[in-house]
Image (cartoon, rainbow, N blue to C red; front, side, top):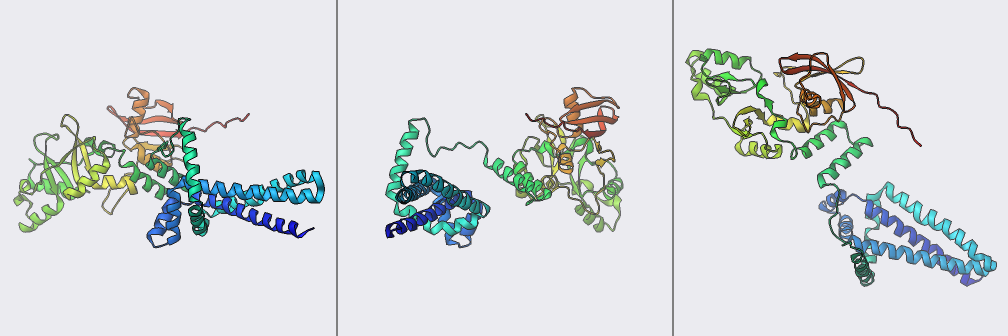
Length: 428
């Protein structure tokens, strides 16, 4: 074995190490978290800043990685073939092909890429500086390669750099959170909160409002003592007042204002001027997105608004708490009246009040019932049945069996929902 053979083997090993470096760098840089790198750069990590600059010029980075990887692989294979030809003659070509294929695939591709995939952020930071200088060193060559690639792709009708995303940024974020939840890194409650924030732009006020049939209101024409007693018995602090008929809302009464007025007259409710305490009602359209309504609540520094339809008729009311509950879930305090609308049964079915929102039921049970055509579970059943069902009727849709338990006039007040067992999918 001559000195030249030894030198060739050393160069082969060095080329394989470089190949492993380029392969690992490719996986690490492309799989690294942009959010993590941006955050690290914001906190002063210079290597994270280099990673971000490399990823901003992905074409040049990809060209550098492929150029370096292929160059060292070809050099290693050529030198190894020369050495084995000298040792074994013509059959050395076969030996070189087998040995280099195994070595390159296992040690220069799979091994470094697997290691980089398991810790992409850490590896990306480690290879950032060497890759940065490599890209700068071969900049002119890479620019020429970029231009050639763009020219070829252009003739095939593809323009590099065009935005061809299938999902929106919000849907990509939602998918990432769902994936982390399935992997156990994000709890269900945190996933629901994140989804609630993303849904604010898609939901409108009518999706979360308290319907007028469930509103707590006061008659402004009642004697002051009656109004005071009704306020004391109410679990809320702001109540709409109507005059003449319940549709004619004339203002909002705040409990604090009433208490101050009672204190001023030494507790004599008959002397309280309810009309003087009434604040003007704020009317908002039912089609306004929740994200806009949340901003409007903050601008006006109020927490309640009356919801009207396109004809100006009151359909219900919405509060700041209603919107926040879409993000964090139910918010209750010591004065809230417990009205459990979802009751699990021993047989696996669930008894549900008809007025329970579909979104709330999905959150509690982890289901995916559609809420595009109806807001409440009773509305979903009526929409699917195309009729107002009678008590005892059952319907099957969306993988569940719905049975009507109670009905009050034209309203479904209670349902039993039974998830259906899914049939196993046969393969082959």
